[in-house]
Image (tube, rainbow, N blue to C red):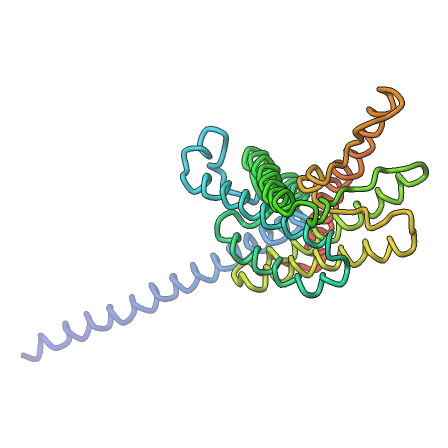
Length: 310
């Protein structure tokens, strides 16, 4: 009995002596490995900080990668979006024709109609309802090119339907009906006044629309921001018209609706004069507003990147 006890004590002593050694080894390994991982993380953070800037991803694609000319027509939701653009553009055209008849005093009374239209159409297509918005979203890569072109066709079709409805009521009214509003032809020394009004108004509308997209989770906030931008652009147009009496409120801020206001000259002394009038009308009411739409979206993105907005 006395001889067995020392053996047990020797085993326990060996166990006690071996455990601290292994623990010491693990501590040494962890200490030796820890600086390596920290330095790697620091190097990655430094290199990643050098590569990225506040404008990284400025021109990145913001729509679904799968959307292309081969896939977009296979989605039934795309046809619903097109139909929504047709209906919404028809309502906007009716509103603008009515506004042309009633004058500036009706802006406050009818501004809520713009709000209602955008709320009703937003869930279908995002409620572009204007080629300047559609072109701005295409260039800033918020929607695909094929979707943008189809939206523009739908918006022109919707504007034509709005004009058709308005004209049918005009014909039914007979002699007591109002005349259909028309855009005043661009005269001499008026081109740049008309052009700057359309360009400035398009920038305002596109900027407000781009900002409204940040609040797309709240449809009412989105629609209120867009409607506020449209009303603000109209007020700017009326102020400029008051300063230049020869302008005569000759602005529309929507190329699709402008076509329905008969912007092209119907007569002239010769073919060159008619062609020049057509080119002027397209420049003022189509080309420059679309450029303004692109500028408005890029200004919104630029300011958002500078402010650190995600």
